Image 1 (spheres, rainbow, N blue to C red):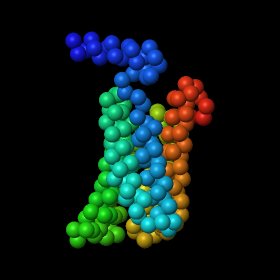
Image 2: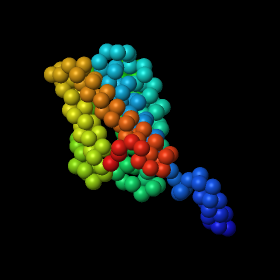
Image 3: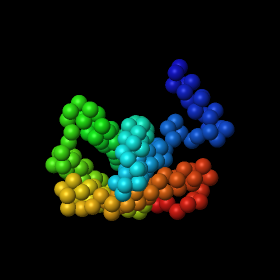
Image 4: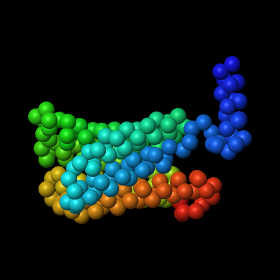
Length: 198
């Protein structure tokens, strides 16, 4: 009975053009959560502002919203998108805990601990770089820029790189993610390719 009612509702919504499937593509939500938080982090690293915007976005948008997008992507059968969104959502939560929550309890990470944290994410991102070639050119560029960002953050935590060029590279990474999300949103709403995306 419930399945019949669900099918009737789905058919009714499709008839008026509301949506074509039960779950919309979560990429716009996930990518914008990643993009805005990453751009804020880049601007923090170049010294434009303090950690406030990054921490706020990390817990709410980059963390929570992106994680929700990952759960939806898993529901839609995407191991790549689901794992990426859930994992990088968890990354922002972990960063919030590492840089804000733990220091309030007297556990302030030193340079070697930060290096270890970012190194783990460098290795994680490298695995995605090997798989992303099958996903599209824009996402391929995004993941390789993200890998470079983590490598540069490794260098910053070791004291061999300046945070300023690292911050700009991080900002550009976020800007590309924002473009991909914007193109996905605009193209989906218009029902045709308005902005280049592959």
